[in-house]
Amino acid sequence: MTRVCLVGDEDVNLRYELLSRETAREALATYDLREPFENAVGVETVSLGAAVALLNDLDWYLVRFVDEAMVLEPSVSEREWLSRDLATALRDDAVDSDEAARFLKIYGLEPAGAAGDGTDAGDGSEAGDDRDGSVAGDDGPGRLVEPMYVTRTGGDVPEYDLRDVAETVVERVTESEFGA
Image (cartoon, rainbow, N blue to C red; front, side, top):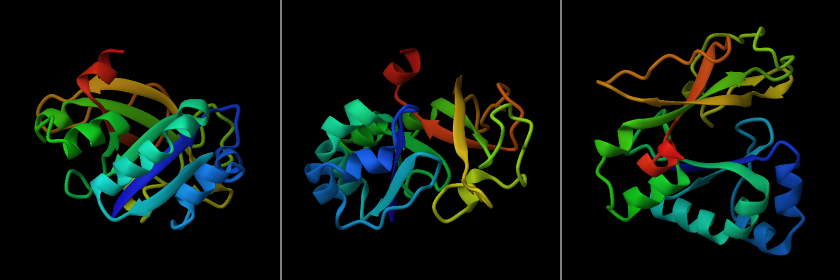
């Protein structure tokens, strides 16, 4: 299954904003909504094409309420999310898989209930280990913080060093998103 994750802007309650509007509510009605990260809405779709189509259907809401739209496509990577633009480019065969792995946006993942200073590092498991790609603590799902843009050289993902966190979430982005 291909997963879609919409991360809300800081100043909105994303689930409320999406479900309080008829068109978005209808677009999401057939999906089992999850909260993979704090203030995020996640769903499973049948394919990369279905994930991109859902994002296109929700475009008006994405522009207004969403900070990040990501897709986790198992045929590309079991652990690394794709940006919406990269998912679309891969669906359209506009980029090859080698090129799709070069530019990365790495988020720190703070456990739920962390004070926001990065001192509570969680349990040390990788974010991609859970079924829904999240880290959930006793207080709920973890919060994505402070993205770092890096270029992959070789096969390794550079280490996240903006905050002291035990977990990270890797998102592959297009070259134009990387340079923006």
